Image (tube, rainbow, N blue to C red):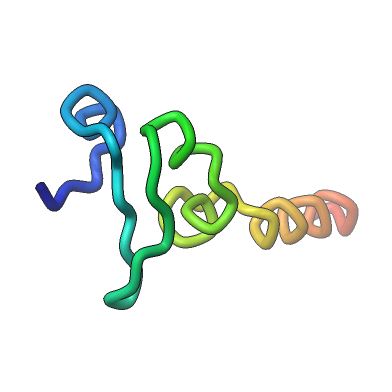
Length: 62
């Protein structure tokens, strides 16, 4: 199944395999995938880069 709805995938698949740019990025349970930093960076948008950027913007008053 190719799908981006993690709630749906979590109910349907075990294990979950996440791919990015044709390569396996992570493999495991849906809970494991949703906590995986590489997956977060690539797909969920809450990764360290975004966190640091948001913190810098808040400090700058943006």
